[in-house]
Length: 201
Image 1 (cartoon, one colour):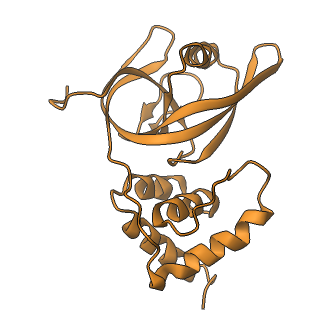
Image 2 (cartoon, rainbow, N blue to C red):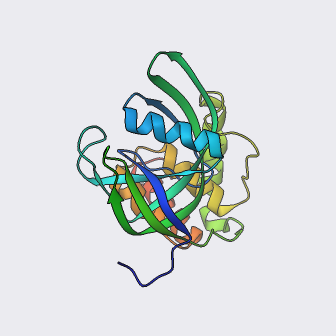
């Protein structure tokens, strides 16, 4: 048990094989009863749930062990065109750190969690301007709604989060990027990644 006081108690978690970033869009097709029930409860109360990358285990079956840092997710759209299958679109909000967890009898994992500070607004340093140019070029090619407006192409946090989502980066590396407390560190790493991929001169 952490000595840190939780901002969220019994926050329902959805451990996944993907990383959600603040401001990001996450489409989910949900059929496991525990998660359908969880999402219905969130829609009824308007409360978010937590998305965490799986550290050990799988998305289905026995409760998975999540990484310690996740992202709050709020449901922005849903439908149930097929009985027992819930389609939702969630949007990432603030990050949180898991203090401790427990599993309900149905296998739903809940956490006491502490909110992490949001990235402060930071202009994009000149030396990382290629990141903004790259994202500007990518955005028109993406599916409608994948990166909703406003497009903050002068903000280092927004740019680094969107590129981290879109680029072919391994989930664990995305997790490390999401956890970083400094947007300038994140955009610097992504700038280096673009260079390693031969995407900039």
